[in-house]
Structure formats: structure tokens, C-alpha cells
Image (cartoon, rainbow over all chains, first blue to last red; front, top):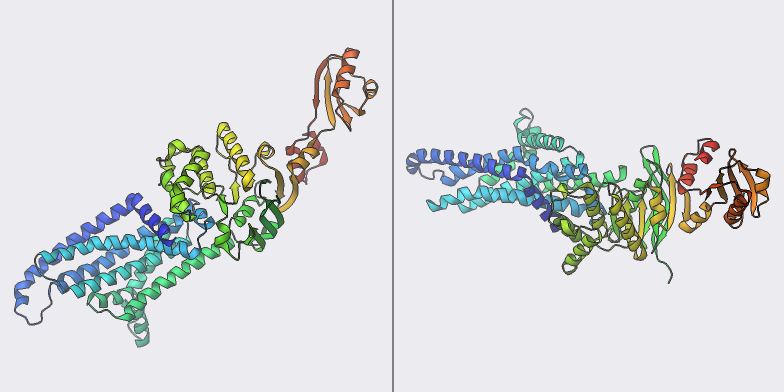
Length: 250
Length: 316
């Protein structure tokens, strides 16, 4: 049942030109960044060749590209998630799901899975660029895989936050702006807290970015994995609660 | 065969903040019944239907669908329901076939039965020719029919239709009414409407909701009896003579409305033939002789405009 809703959500996304436009724009910008990063590497390569244990192509090209991809997707993810529940509420189609024999958890999980599948497709398209480097050189496959996994977890968190925001309002634009705001806050939160030690630690832990960075370095640490899973679970539970509560207050 | 109780609603309450929208509504619906919910705007019809369909949680009360408590076991209870809200819940970007296929999957119709179920629902709602068209490009009437198709697709025990004939043309209304009657034979149906003749045409039971309370609940037969007139309306060319009319057998009382118009009250059988004979023999020149029927509309107005003076009610 979750899968039925997820596939419907995914197909719905592709029925609107928005998803196609986002895929195209993201691909274009990332291709440009990837090529310019590759150029930098070509310039540095002769000098790097002489250094023992110098960073390789994975560190100089792939990691920064994936890092930028994370931030770029933070900008576009709200545009994908904004319609998930707001549109259903605005068009009064939520009644179809609510009167069908499915639980609220199944509805939210289905929607989340659908949006995450879309992001995974997007990620696969981005991954094609670094993978193309295999034609001319060899990559650190472990680092690449860790980086992609980190990005996938990041995108799933974007989906969860965005879906929660779209349960709050009937206006997709408001859902988009508020999820963008929350995501950006979580992204930059470790910039502050300069003075006190314990605050820095907390803000550092809360930041979406710091956890991505360790994945990009090729570190697969369960603490980072748990951070993302906790974030996703929190916002999905909040979404379910929110929808249940709407049925109570009308 | 004993009729099965498909819906039982007990002491249903619904508050919106401090506003009491539905107050102590209780009723039962048996298999083979079509229940018409009537009421002025904002009376609580839609809220009641939303609660029965699980879209809205009641503030208090109990709803059982086919013996399954909606609040305790919502999944199993909802499997027995087909619901058409006021606005058909259709995805405008999908074709009719895609949409109905999705609905069938949502309602866990098995893969083998999905195709036939969609085909049957389409055929019943007259959607045969538009299966591959986008719902957003269809007219309001067709969208409404897609909504009805969605509600009956999985062959639920109970079908709840909130104003099903809104936006349909007269031919479609006739089709949908006969569909409702047909469904009503094997299922239990609740429908709400503003169109009073529709209730008399399709329903077996009528309930009127006013200000959140159930103010009238009768079967159509009881209603017909209540509506059976005991008044004849007579109009002639020549002036009428009240005392002469009163001698006609069967007439209890004569009420002159003008020189040549009168209301004739009777109790048992209709004395129209005797009145006609009297008018003919007296050479008064018959213009009109008709039963002065009380309509459902009058009952409705009486019950839902309780603050109006009596005179207004009877003048209608």
C-alpha cells in the first residue's frame, strides 16, 4: 500500500513540468561546476604528481562537487516537496486517501518514499558525472559511495522536512518558503555559537552540513547515519501527528 | 431475510471550537435502504457524512460500519465505505483510467479483479468514452461522475454521496438517480441533497437535519402518507355557493377563497367525482379541480424555518 502511494506520488511529480525543469537545471549547473572543478584538477595535477600522499581526483573533483550539489539541492528540494500535501488539501483530494482503507502512517510513508525516490533518481543522474571519470582514471570507489550515501540521506531529510511543512499549509509557496528557511537554518546553524563551548557542540551536531562532510571525506560513521535517520523519523512522525490532529480539529 | 444493519451511528457530536455543528445524531441504515439527508446550508449534513467516512473525527459518539467500529478499527471499517465528498477528489493530471486504477489499488482490489472493477464502474457511470482523457479537461458533470465511479468501484457495503447530482445535466441526473436506486438494492446508501424531488425519487428514507440536530426521520411511505392531501382545490366560471357545496357527500368543510374558488376539506376517500357531478348539474362551469398537495418542500420549510410565523408556512 505504501508502495502504491509512493509510485503514484513519483508519477505525479513527473506529470508536472516542474520536476523536469528541476532535473534539467540541476544537471546543467552541476555539469558546469563539475567541468570547472575538473579544469582546476588538470592545472594542479603536474604539481600534485610530485607530492607523496597528495589528494587524488576523488578529493579534488568529486567531494567538492557533491558538497555543492547538497547545497544546490537544498535550494530546489522545497519546490518538489511543497505540493505533496498542500495540493491535496487545496484540491480536496486528501479525502480520497482518508476514506480509503489506509492508515495515516502509510499515507505519510508512501508520500515520503515517492519524493525520496525522485531525489534518488536525481542523485543517480548526478552520480553519472563522477562515474564518467572512470573512462580516463580510477576513483576511490569507497569515498564516492560514502559521498553518495551521505547525499542520499541528506536528500531524504530534505524530503521529510518538506513534507512536514506541506502538511501545515494549503499554500504550496508558503510550504516551500518555510521548508527552505528551516533547511537553510539547519545548514548554517554551526556558523554561530562561536563563544560558548557547549553551544558550539550542540549547534555543530544539529547542522546538516557537518554530517555530510564526514561522509564526503569517506567516513561512514554510525553517528552521522543516526543523525539523519533521527531527523527523518522526527519530521515524519510530526507529519503523521499533524494530519491526525487536522482530522480532529477539522 | 433480515435486513443487515450497515451503518449504526450513536450520539454523534462534533464541535468546531465552541461551535456545535452536529448534536446527538443517531440513526441506523439497513441493507437495501437509500437514506436522504436534507437540511439547509450549514446544518451539519456534510460534517455528518465526513465523520461516517472517517475524514473527520467525531467529538463524541460511536460509528459502526457493517458491525465494525470506525474508531477502533478504521482500516477494516473504511474498506466497507465508498465516499464521494462535496468536491469530487479527483487528480486533474491523471486520465480517468489511471485515476480509477489508482483508486482500485488504494482500496486493495486484487490485481485480477481490478480491470473488471474499473470497467464496470465506468460503464455504470457512463464514462465509457472518456477513459483516456485527462480528468482536468473533463466538464464538471463528468468529473462528478468520475467521483461517483470512484465511490462504487470497490463494491463497498455502504456508499456515501454528498450532493451527487450537483453539476449534472437533467439526463445525467436521471441516469445517476437510477444508478443510486439500483445500488440501493444491494448496498446501503446515504446521500445528501438540496433538491427535494430527488429525495422523493430515489430515497427510501428521509432525514432532515437542522442546526446539527435530527428533526425529522421517516420512511418515504410514512412521508407519502403524511403528504397525502385531504383538501381539494376547486375553481369554476360562475360564483360558488358554499352551502350548496357542503351538501356534496364526503365534503366536511368548505372554505371560500374568492367568488369562484374554494378549498374543500374531506377525510376519507377523494370526493372529486361527486364534486364534479355537482358542479356540472349546477352549471357552474368547471375550470379546475385538483388535490391541494402538501409537498416535501412544505415539510422542509416547516421544520427548518421554525422561527417564521405560521401564516407564512401555510401560504406556500
